Amino acid sequence: MPRFVVLTGGPGAGKTAVLEIVRHAAGPGVVVLPESASIVFGGGFPRRTSTASRAAAQRAIFHVQRELETVATVEDGARVVLCDRGTIDGLAYSPEPAEHFFRGVGSSQAQELARYAAVIHLEVPSREQGYRSAGLRVESAEEAAVIDKRIADAWSPHPRRFFVPSTANFIAKAARVMQLVSDEIALAEDARRAESRTDCMPIPPIR
Picture 1 (cartoon, one colour):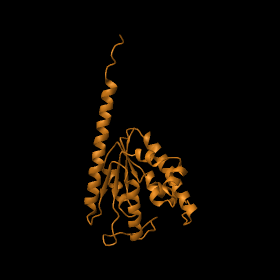
Picture 2: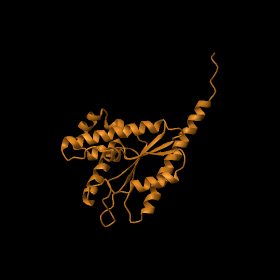
Picture 3: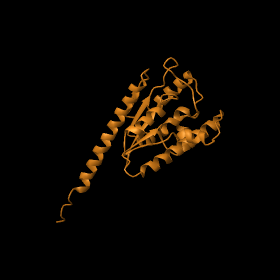
Picture 4: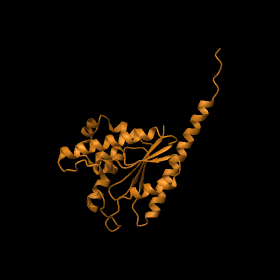
């Protein structure tokens, strides 16, 4: 079973750029998943403002994320799967209370938190630090900061959450993420070696 690691943060935090760096630098054994929200909205799912429409969109994103992770589970040689957001991120965008959100997707917060070995949160830059709205993002810098806080709150119960603050030096931010991902790769390797040793242990004779 691969080790799932979430890279999260509000709009404009730099996740896409960091994931490209990881994709090219991490090497074999690391699978980088695309963002499920981009798949859903980029594929034509209606992006409307009503409560019912927003709730439906987050349920769709949740299920796409789950299936992306299912596919990654059977990837040959995948030791670490790096997710561009995780299932818990839907809480920050859903207009529903947490209990309604999880009931709607047939899960619970505890179950979803347990799916991920670690969570790396990239802080959204302020307007002064260079925040820009682009692509499918429609949020202003102020709106992005609010979402960033909601994402942080949603993931706060996770026991291994790492916060990477925004900085004018993006290379430093990316380097910090690479170090965290490298640590997770090392932990995955340790687990694989321990499992191999267990599999190779001789079976004691039956007396």
